[in-house]
Length: 274
Length: 298
Image (tube, rainbow over all chains, first blue to last red; front, side):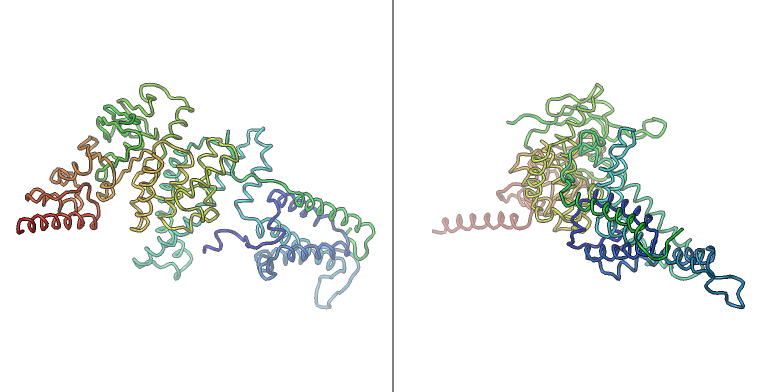
């Protein structure tokens, strides 16, 4: 349960882990754009290779990466089936007993779509969740969104809320376990019975959990007041994020990669998306 | 005698319900002077108003009536500006009961930095303060840990480090040891002693543990929102019946010494909070009387 609490972050010492979180957010966005630039077979091959390269340089076990694809298998399957049957073109197969024709274009489209989604998930995972702690990500978003402060968007407040939420996830998880054990000791049953019965069994857990969460919130609010918290104005920071040359180089590399993909659209070979 | 840091006169506070109607007076005319560098324990059973008293000193709650002067600044009878409130809270830090509910950040050193960050302390100074505070509570090795993996006593020491990083003149401990195991409690009490003796910080320890109160220079007993007793631990612990009548139990060692004295056995010693020093005092007494007897025999 505690593993879930801190997301998918995989602690390791890799060049990817050491990059500035802001650079990684920017790179993730650029990489998403890249996945949509590909148009032909060469492009998609290069894209797939790039995802494999990302996995290797960030020292994430392949098993872990593949596991993250599990929840979206249904989406992948669904989109590929739609793609197979919704495209028209050169007839590849017409099984006698079927009413539907299968076209070569459909198969290509489905393959490209599967590759695109897979690379998208792996890429954003590597840039963001696997190699960046949630707290670093929050910091990065606060920095990147700080221009919005001029439009009176409370960026600092949102970041503070995120930080506190992250801070209290393990505390509340522990508390939930305690309450569950206390209710089990009194004969509560969470594992058997119909769905409705099991959902009802959760009420005696949620009520004390909410009560204690509110009490914690009140305590925390006065503790923060006591430590002179008065919003983001005039605050300094202990750990200031600083770009290094390598961060700029990494971002530039993704841009170059995108340009490369565009060139491949023109000069590459293989099936091309219309 | 050093200067008076906190001065209260007829300080009252009542909690009000949703309609603004006065429900119950929690504090009823507290007049007390606390000097700079003093270590004062505030005793009282649950609901006696001792925690309310602490919250008034930090302006978490506003007094209903009476006078409150901290560090020469009168804080009652007028509207306070935000700067004044911040300045006061910087000077009077507070450590709460539940160690989990007062840590804000997910990394120890960032939590310690939270207070000075709010005060706008600039960078090289900020880093120095964080490191100094962490080494003061002996937690520098844990600077990059996650607070939720630490023990209760360690978390509470981090909370203390977070307060001393703001460089306060006075720290209020609001039952800060109540949720800790014996070893955690010892860690925190040693830290409090150290802050008071070595750094000269005025300490108000609000507690219902008599043994803890015995470590202070002075004890204030609050009962039903009123000041019941005010004096050195020795003076307070001799009033055993009065303390018992308000639900407070004198530490057994102190009670024993007191009983011995009333029985006419003139043991010497002050402020007895632990068994060892109590045994030492009694042993000393016997050594002396034996010596005396031997002299007579010769």
